[in-house]
Image (cartoon, rainbow, N blue to C red; front, side, top):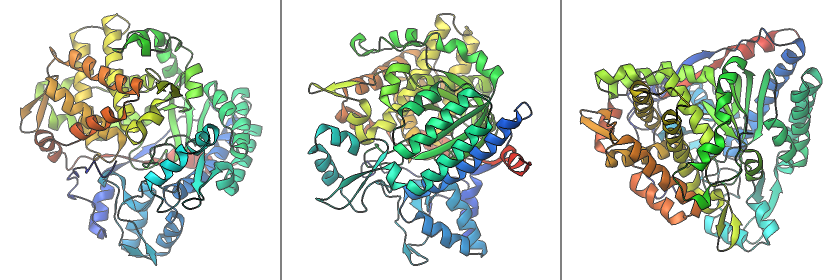
Length: 563
């Protein structure tokens, strides 16, 4: 995929690209692209047992950080240790940026290395290896794919499964379950989760933690994922292997992440009505009826939380504002997927990035239409619509999934699908009177989405979300829904935007429904570019932070409190 997509690197914060090796001034500028923020969450209502449990979970999350290092690259842990020994000013700056990226490659600079080619006796790849550390070093994609395809169906499923690595060499590849690959760390995680389960007085949390501890050792996550779907607790924890973005070779393997959260019950209750309309939204998607899911229902939970601590894939580069899990199609087909909105993270992003961006890329009379509620609601809709649309396909008479069919293109197409389907869903709900109606509400929805598109593109094109946004931006410009006014200023054409969204949504949904890999590749090749008029806007955003860098204040306070 990287051979086809050669991203146009953004000139941000005075650094036109990530050089290797980066100087100390370069590193300070690169780090400054992430605005430091203090994340807090109200822990005053937690019981003594839940306070003890959450402290244990933060401890467990720190182990997840180490697992993530190893999964991204086999040399990461040794490199991290070497960087910690370098006490020079340059060494400190390198260590700081390494930890932000969980490796020696700058995530928002097309995963280019910021270290010398040789460091502490180690060879540092110029780019993050597409295979990460999930497959044998140097194994070719074609050879691995041929080996997988030759396996019996059950063995092939395990080779492509979320929770296995591939080890060995050509002709002698073998599947290794995560429970074996990471046995030492997962044993420690299981112990901490069982201790947290013993501490809490919440039956739902106790059940999930006990089942997830067992899953770490058995490699069977199904029961614990169902328990996570049912989690109803002031302490809201997500911990385990989930997202597959780090596997850029196939998009199969899940990276470890952790989000230790406290539920915002008041905000969660406000969002409950969305779950009542899941099937209605599915039934009205711009997609041939034969591909719609007749059993989505309204069972999938949605929660709003405030983050206490993030780790691993949950605290790396650009911060997650919301997530939609699990990715296991067995659960999605029965229960949908759970949406978790990180409200304090979203508020921090809105203030630090979106507000200043809107003043640069929107006409002055449109800037007042950018507000937090529209931003928050579209993130919610994005997460909802990950669970809508096709999740099962039939290819040559064999059952499959869009993830398997679209392979390395899946993450880009799916993130773009969720964005644009979310926009479609909100427009539909407005038209039906399910959400606030009127011209003002529509202006806020589409204008905030336009400003937010530039916030996403500000990250560079190495991330699936940004690549997906490039498709949306260029397609909507071609259709006239977005209009370039000149000098890097943009507007929404409210007469054309609705139909343009419907047309693009139909394209994404149809690609997934038919598992059309060639069509997905063609769309990515045509649209994942930064056009000159968009670049003018991005060039004005050099001083705007790309994202936030959280300091977890509440987690520190809980860790320091006597247990």
